[in-house]
Length: 180
Length: 407
Image (cartoon, rainbow over all chains, first blue to last red):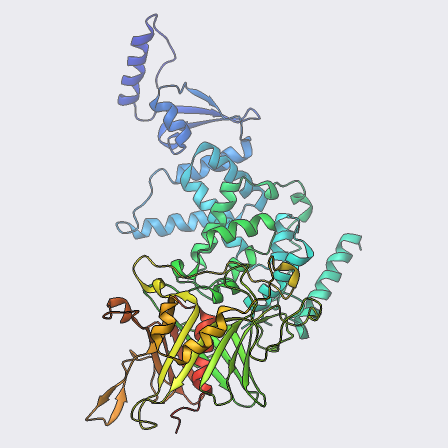
């Protein structure tokens, strides 16, 4: 573990930290959620969040990073997913591992309600965690499929703001669409 | 029972009534096997605070794009249209994501039927004829095997109306309501008395602000005379003529289609064909400029019976049927339909663009429309850019109707 001792010379402490991160691959990073929950994770996991990876590259990452936009419950879910996906198995090289991971992903999202998924999408977008953002968005897309417009509005609490003329046009459109 | 769940029950009831007999009129017309499931396990109250309606646009767009990408064939393509019916915001995004058939090779909204087909690949459809009610049904083929299963996506219906001096085929988006007064009226095909010349009329102009024409019977459409139930307009978009060839009725007939709405340049490299963007509804108020002039179409009518060059001087696209070859051993006329036509019939044809002047280029080898028999009342129809499904369908209907060179 790298020490938090700082030498009087700022530059050499940078070098120390650089050397430390080279020689100690299990560097830890501390993330703090907006509601004060702290999560200590491996640097490799933290790097899944591009926003943090850039901070590390630019050497702006202290050991504790505040994540102001994300609450603890959501952040913990995101970290759980990130830990599982630190290494993405290659479908061609390791089909078995890919299948196992897909199955874990399916179980992971099954337990979540829509509102949580929505928050995860926003957080993953903020953190720039592409893998989870894509997965969560696809989950929502799959949820929407095979629902009528009315059902979608009901579930997502969206108001029907079409004019009567537009409604009429859409009625005709749907009659044709769902015919046969 | 809370008021809220009472409302939910009522909605469910209305939903089931609409499904039973009035699917089409009450809007969503889902297949009988689908049910509206009031998902009571989902706590709706929790979502009152949710922000789905305020989802950042780029994230919503990503979700909708995923749907558009994965639901690329019918019947699942209906999910794309469904998303466009949720709210204005969703509709705007979906309409922007969905590309025209010319580019995507996919049919999505009803307007796709009025837009030019894809470049470089044929859309494979089939037509079922119902002799008992004089109606023809156009379907998009969903699998490689030809027609005739119930495997198609319904596109258009056409009903034949015989009149003293002509025959009309009324084209509709609704297979159950095929009449001129219907609000799903798309256009019509009208034949002359002899069944040798046909005009295709579109209910809406190709280009907004196009002038209204006099119909053959010189009946002007007047704002005062038209009731909301009468279709909004009749814009000629094609003129078709049939002739015997030099061998008379022993040989294949000659077909010519003057496409009033498509310039000849459309088939040349870099050319484009006009594309309608929205279905206008039978409501005259929607037409911005509505003037009564003798239109180009009268001239186009006379042009269609003359040599193609006259029409081409007007810059219009002319389609002609590819001449079959006489096969000495088989003793019959042959066209290569690439397996899509399996029964010999004088109605079968392939249309190519006639060269304007000078020698034919490679663009004049391209089969733009192909039609032919595969069963007793089943025909395949394959079309591509620059014509639309609607135009292709009406041209094929004329082949049914014409008496030229029929056995």
